[in-house]
Length: 438
Image 1: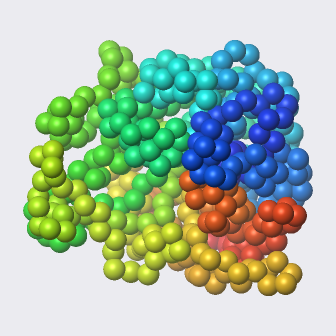
Image 2: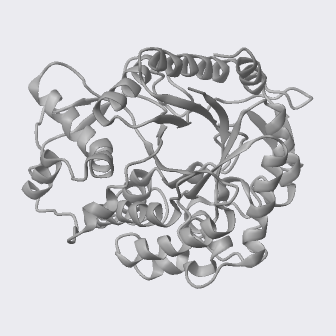
């Protein structure tokens, strides 16, 4: 079984050209301008520098490049026919990749919902799933002859809960009911899009952000809190995708809180498009406790406490725990519980980079993070997990969503004033690790 080495990006984070060639605003254009204070109008200017960026990717020795398609560049306002100028860009990107011996891995949705569709209700509205299926068909009709690896959605949990419940991502709403509706409609969108894109000679999957929900202690309350956390982040997505039903305990918990999912007849059959490859985006493991810091077991609304506790281990500059051993455990758990092929589609770390006078960053901490997580991935594979690839996040420094440009995940440093790209120590290590083989 071959193993794919790759790097990953997303459209809004790197492309720029936000108002060129027919592209219209997405929710992230709006949120970035009105809330974040920094935006992706230029970002890494990848739209204009794409051929050079592909050569940069080739220099790293990777097999594949994971990128996303800007919905509003391809289908302005989220409705109607495809925009030829936008489609032409992805045509050129795919051809450039293939011409350099790099396999394209295409993600249809990495959070850039057209603002016009948000104004019509966004993901809490069922029609958005059908609009996404239409968009997916436009992209597939143009690129399916050359792109064989497809992912419908990237991290639908983030889109639903960070965007519609917590309000820290676009579109910035704060409604748990909206987040639940968005969850179901994002899954419905996956099923509809997978049916549109799927052909016998291609692979269609989805990428989920999956951590580890570990009880903080063996206290039954902590065990119950970890179960709830796992249900609300991981199983609420994977069970309907793979098994064709939502987890019974999650539905029971929601009912006890007075909430339901907007399931209609036939929805679960549509959603149950078993991924050909499940993308696993992993950054850190988490512990959970069933009591708050004052010892209370229920919140002001009478709901059970589910409190995240960071494991007592070193952290990245984002405050994220570094837990490669838990990553191996997670990959084995996903293999045993769901039995689908896996690929690590995002894994990386933020540190406070310091460049020398040439622009080079000796990022030893990021290099160590990548080394440990690559080895954790291969350890799971050696123990029987069907893990077929590892994609480092991210190819280059970019617009890091609500963090703006202050946080850098890149293997390649970007000077945003000059747009100069300089591979960091981590990029050189990754190149050499790929050369060394399995």
